[in-house]
View 1: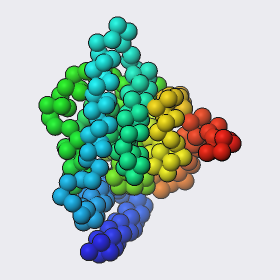
View 2: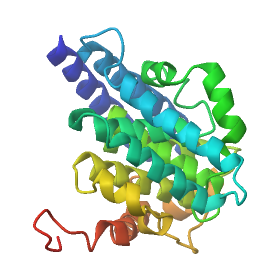
View 3: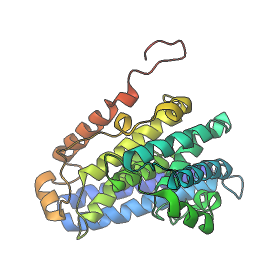
View 4: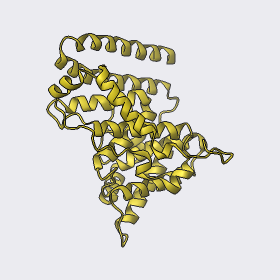
Length: 296
């Protein structure tokens, strides 16, 4: 069953990719519309594969994610009544540190994933993860509606470089990297921006940078290149989110297609690669020490 689901997922992914490459040379507007369909399809297929792999009716990480969400809710409640309330980037740093501290008490097997999923559930103010088909089980189990309302009432507005939307992109993409993998998570972020270019807020490279930063953060935490201990002690926004002042945003679809061609065009790929380079050159991924005390 596992092999059949995995093969079906790969087969459908390749089939859709090939169709989209042909369409990109013929009808740019059709391409954008089908890109959105492909994004949703890839998401559902990945979710189906995850569901097929599950051996228990409840998500195995639900208890750990609940610990993280509860820790963030309690930290936010403390801050809400503090004499000097934290806000913006400082609030984000405070909440991430408290989440990492709570994750240290979980089993080594679950700690990193529960931490990342819990951040997505607790710092994002939207319902995007709770409403995601076939993937929302862990988030619904981690926090009921009453608890969610309590959290949102005291959460405030945690930001990255002063922007609430970037914080939400960061934590949601980090969670998606755990749920469906980093490549699929980045694809979903790109598709979301393509959709926004169709009469919405426009394509934002700022948002895409936050997506990519969240995915890089998730990869390093999951692979234990970043320890929960260090994040609990010294997480800072500047260490993990680039402050790129010259990135374009609000780009409508016609302007995007004229300037970048498509998401497979070298112009777009080079721009995305530069963002990735800047993300991975951030201080959070350097000057760390290994277990012997030597710089990595």
